[in-house]
Image (cartoon, rainbow, N blue to C red; front, side, top):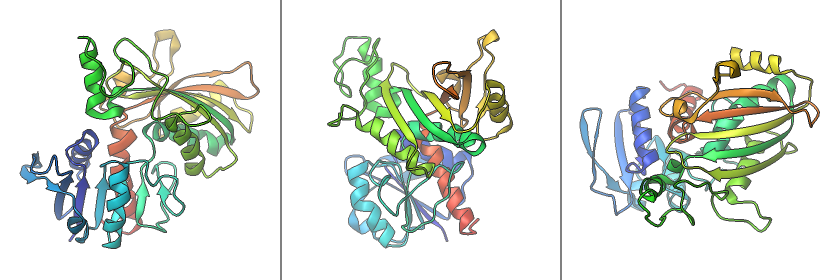
Length: 329
């Protein structure tokens, strides 16, 4: 009997997790939904059944679950994930709490597999997830020397308040999620600033890329930007390769690899767009071109739905991966 829990079930990502479980027909025998005390008692219709969301408490987390999808924030995960783990669950956590912890797997199923030294698995940052998949394709074929990211991140990455800031900003309402208006604006600032001038979001992408690709010496830098877009993140990557490549060879590589979808036909104005990524599982790549100012360096544009592949879908894919590794159907 498989017991599955979703913690943070009333949030944007939590609801997308439920939709993804349904869409991918993930089998389980019992499903329990958890939230904070504030949202406990909410009723959610799922697969023809009405679930009453329970408050996540120490006692509830001490019950036996086989798998827990955790999307309840870093401090909540820091407290409750070890309790679930101690009671026998494999916890797949969507927060940043465990990503760089030694012994905790940081997983994108198209790129790497968990070894399960601990029974907590970390879901990477949304922009990192969509970026490391095409980078893995390039790494396998050519090797990587350096990656420079610039992200263009949608407001849904900030949850409901971010979406409200964009919607209500048109009416002149002061922002609730951001330090400045996001409506008709661009903010070169995601998460807190660190002492070196980088933001925590930028440092996440740098550290997580190295960990997922198993390359501590890879040179990585990032600038993370919030843009007035509802859903789907876009990422520009400047990638320096170890071995010689051409635009045509990279396009051919992406075209043949089922981990990404190539859209790269500039003559017809065809390239990946955020509005085309929204609601889709795929990671789209395009605008492949050589950087003439650096040796063996190429530009890659990438879009993906940050609530799906960037969060809920990746977590459910990890669940499928773990069950497969354990031989569980």
